[in-house]
Length: 396
Picture (cartoon, rainbow, N blue to C red):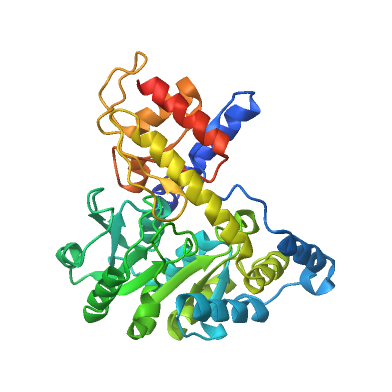
């Protein structure tokens, strides 16, 4: 008998959080570290949201347990936001408020996936997706994409990967870590394929408002109402409203699956913190002015980071279309002597960058894309200039 369960023991550490923790540890020791690892806005939460939270903290109603599924007012606000911004018709009863979008992902998999079910996972993927699938007893089926295809999966690839055990498909646009945004025609084609083949869609829409240039977010269930009965939408306030630390996410889905997810939450975490829920109501009811300002800054920073990375010999990088990441390839750099060390993969390269020039990046192996690395541009302009210059100088 093992001391740690096989289930928990098989989980790998979150690479993004590990990189961020290491960078913070070095900073606390006085090192001048530039962190491109964490995926969170570098802006403070908008003031009107903070004010609403302060007022909520003083209200005794919020000092008690509340419904496990979420405050009725917040569930209603989420349903209205989903109709307004994703074009998906839903009721408040179809919403479960969770402790962040990562918790929404976990509960979605627990409610949907049985042992042996296969879940199609286009790569590169967010590092937590395969872990959440495996914790539910499912099997992640990775479907690789390429930089030449702008990291977008095709219907033909999905069909080739489908088996009688295929239960669901993860669909993420804008993508993390790639920053890719699917055009509406491709969103519709993939959605039709899923519907025709009885494949559930788990649509992560967390970066919906962070798109650049000609690229625009398109909600798959918004385009195809016939998917309503076989789609789960994951979302939250973290990225749009700079509220990563408030821990408010949600799932929207068909009534039977949502009932199961709500029952699960009632026996696990119960309700999300009421002050955070009140803050989320203020965010959803307060418009998108704050994110408009942030998006403009991210677009400028992303363009600059892309320019600087693309100028490094041996490095290629797709221009970011959405989210707030660049995802460059370092494949031509690997195997070279760099300051007396020869990194064989991007895990070793990331360690070299942190050790030698104090720049933190997340290796592509964490996202199912060896040879690549993720760098966030949700950092200051000065950090982008200095950090990429350090990388360029080391790799010269």
